[in-house]
Image 1 (cartoon, one colour):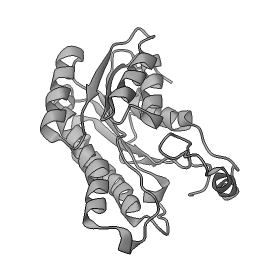
Image 2 (cartoon, helix red, strand yellow):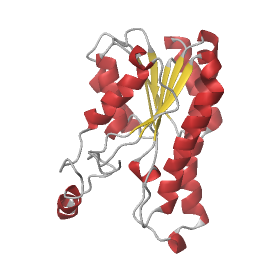
Image 3 (cartoon, one colour):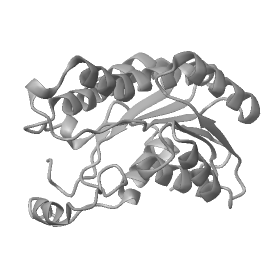
Image 4 (cartoon, helix red, strand yellow):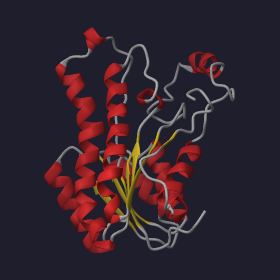
Length: 249
């Protein structure tokens, strides 16, 4: 895998879980990382994890849905580090299983605001700089549930499916500026958002449905992100890479 030295990478939702893992891996490969999350403690933790390398880092604490505040803070970060080369739209929320009848307007709006509107806000904040450079990478975080659906969570599935649609549309729209847009669609990966106590038996049964027989690891997704962020992917756009152990084929 090629070095990310000198590249400026913005990762939203980088205060924990996969976003944090992405930040550490890309910083280890030389990227200057902008760490964004709504959780200040999470941002501090991620910043401490990436501070041991020679690259620069920058902390942003705000809500990805707050267009003006987010954009202003990103502009400050870019004045310090330079224009963003790679955007990882990782900020998102999950939900407990809900029937259609249980999904009210507030629940539906929040799901799409964080997962879909947040991707728009972050992308619009960095797009000008990418177009100026005639180079960019945008990586959206979808899900196997945006590819295959599930029986009780249509709000989450549809939001993640929307990100796949955005990936394909943006890939066509932004290709003239050499801005590549791809998505990762994680399978079952234990993170603080998904690995809740008391569900060990459920997870063990679920693993039996995965052809490879086990959950993945955060690095399985971070390596996919690193590929899309690198020069190795220079002829790849509009694609969805789903490290999922074969549960969705």
